[in-house]
Length: 264
Image (cartoon, rainbow, N blue to C red; front, side, top):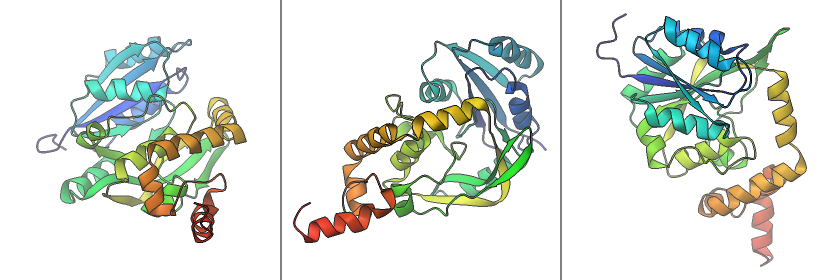
C-alpha cells in the first residue's frame, strides 16, 4: 500500500518505565495497514531500560523518533511529542498498550471524509498475562461526557484541534487527564465516531492498577471535580444545569432542584 495521498499520522508514545512492553507497543503501530506514519517515543524520565530499548527500535526503523525529558508526567510527555510531530492526525498511545492493524486506516478514512468529526476511536479490550476481557465503554454523547469519560486516551484527532485548545493540561495531575482533554476539545462542538470493532488493547499492569487506585479515592475525585468546574463552568451549566457534583450521575437533577428552591 503506497503512502502517496495518505496524510501523515503521528503516533505519540509517552513512556515511563515501559522497557518491558515498549517494543511490542511500537510493533503494533509499525504493523499497521496504514502506510504514512511517524512514531515519536517520549521517554518521561524512566529509571529502567526504556532508553536502551527505544534507541534499539530507532536504529531498526526509519519511521521512529526518540525524545527524552526529565520526569514531568504523561500530559507533558504527550505535548512534547506532538509539538515536534509533523502529522495531520495524532494518535496518543501509551508505551504498554497496543492497536490493531486496521485502526488507523479506518479512523483516517472517517476523518478525511467528514470534517465535522473531531475524534474517532473504536472498541477496546483490557488484557494482561491471563488473557483479555471486554471493556464496556458507555455510548458517547456530549451530555454524558459532562458526567464521565467514555473515550480512551488513544482516540485519533487532528493536530490542528490539539493546537486550538492548547494541548493537554499539564497542571492536571489528578488522573483521567484524557477526560479533561476530550471536554476541552468537544465542549464547543464536533462529532465523535466509534468504529465498530476492537482496535485498542489496554494493558493491565501493576503500574496502571496502582495509578487507578491513587486517582479513584474520594480526595482525588473531589479535587478533579473542583478543577473541572473551575475551568469549564459554562460547559457544565449548559449540560448539567450547574456544576458537576461528587455523585456525578445526580448532578443535573440536583442542580435543577437547587435552582427550583432558589439555592443555586
